[in-house]
Image (cartoon, rainbow, N blue to C red):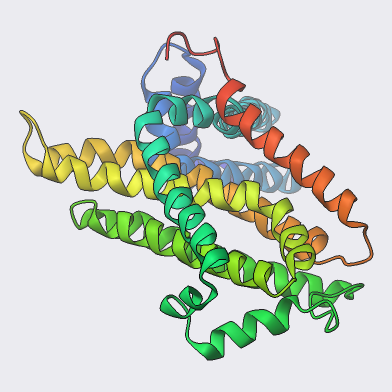
Length: 330
């Protein structure tokens, strides 16, 4: 193919790419944000296309002017591509270090309500079960009670004193799936005018209280509490945040104010979905701790409690101290 034919056939590609690069180079142009949202894939495709065309120009010995033009476009495109990737990484880091904890504090009324619903009924039922052991059967059937006893019986060592890495990774995947399921129910059911989120928060609270109370009664406190104290900080907090996000959705439908219910729900959802992003990250961390740390029976109980206390302190400091002053008044 002669150079003239080559240019006639492919010139539209490098012109389109040059137009996009020029827009990206204009830092004050709103096109930059539009590209990130809707045309990033096309920009990347055109970049690869220009690289391929440049290699053809070199291999076929076309004029140096054409080769230099494409080479310049590639260099400019590479710079913008790198900057966009860097910006995405920065936004990802900023979200988890600043925006997410700031958002929790801005929605603290929902967070504290969800926390009360998740812990309050469980603590009361835990105390009641210690006084009246038979109460556990109002929450769990005898088969599940026996199952929990078997899991946390110190003689069974089911939790895995020294599990192999394959088992740990398999349990890691299981814990992620299970935790996401619990959190999703607390979140999505909030669309039922908050009732669903309230129900699942209270139900999980009562379940935890019943199990903790019963295992305390049968003398399995060490195996149970040393297991849950580590990952519980991330897992339980994430569940509370899920419930908070769900109740925010439900309340936006119940009390839309001057907005239509659809518009009110849209605005609440724009906040709730950000909370869910953070919840997912916390559940992954919780599952990792549960699979690789909580299940390790080779550690002394005091070591488990010490690390568990440190993890609770980290979660508290992250949610209530991280990002302060970075985004102005909260």
